[in-house]
Image (tube, rainbow, N blue to C red; front, side, top):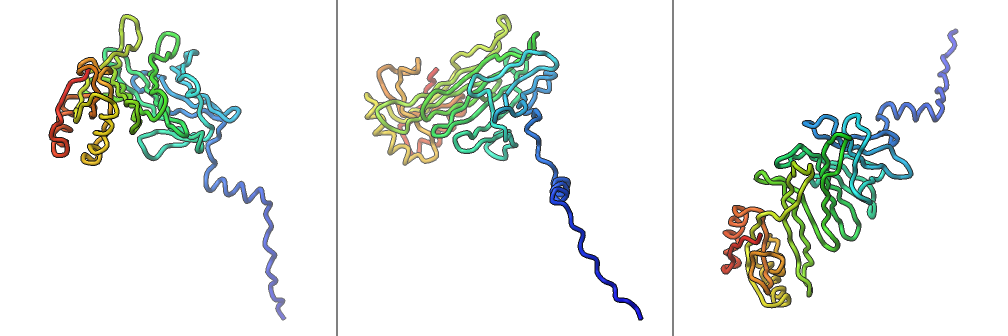
Amino acid sequence: MSVPAVPKPPRRRHPGAVLATAVLLIGAAPAPTKELVLGSAESTPGLEAVAMPCKQGQRALRVRGGAAKRTATLSAPYDALTCDVTKATEGGWDWGGGEESTSWNLRVRAVDLPGGPTALLITHQGGFEHVHRQHALFVADEQGVKRAWEGSEGMGPSSSSVEAQDGRLLFSRTLDLGGGAQADSWALSELRWDAERKKVVERPAEAWAVILRTADSVSDARAAETPLEAACQGTSLLTVDTHDFRRLTRDKWAVASFHPSRQGAEAVLERLRACAPGAYLRRVQ
């Protein structure tokens, strides 16, 4: 008579072995104890932005050049990132991290300085109630790397950008209060390389405005701005003091849309004539 086979009890695994198997299957998360290269300038060998290993809950942000000892960074508090540096998936940003009040984004780009070398441009965005951006240009030199220029946008509901356009590297800043007794502001600068002093210089750039209305007081200009924004939907309008622009008539306030090129301003003027028939074009600086 045959003896029936008795099934063997399942082999018990140690919990640690199960965890180890899972890690092997899904891949281990990047260790925050290692540095992370965030971007580089390929035409300038070794010039790269790096998030250093995590220490005390932060990663130091550094720009280095090859084996040279001297590094550079943005001014505080933009010189540090949270440890959870991750690839960004939207908004034109390269990297991001943090939560709520500590959230931040970073973009790293190689740009050709007009009349000078290739630089690494870093834009850091952070903040909770008001989000602000800090921009900096880094170049290689004999000692390693130096910060050649840095630009901020100020307090309040402001914004800024650094963009290459028609052979110019332009830094724009906007303060849009959205109403009230104070005027908004807008400024455009051109960043160029000074070969003699080996530094980036900033100077006012040629700029244009589509002016929809002028007034003798900021309150009258604000009163005109509200219906114009409703009629000309999709257009960003500002109420500005004409004293801020040397080519505009003094002692006035203007409701206007600002642009870095005449061609761009003319295209906007053509579109706005349907909702603001009295709009006209002016060079402001």
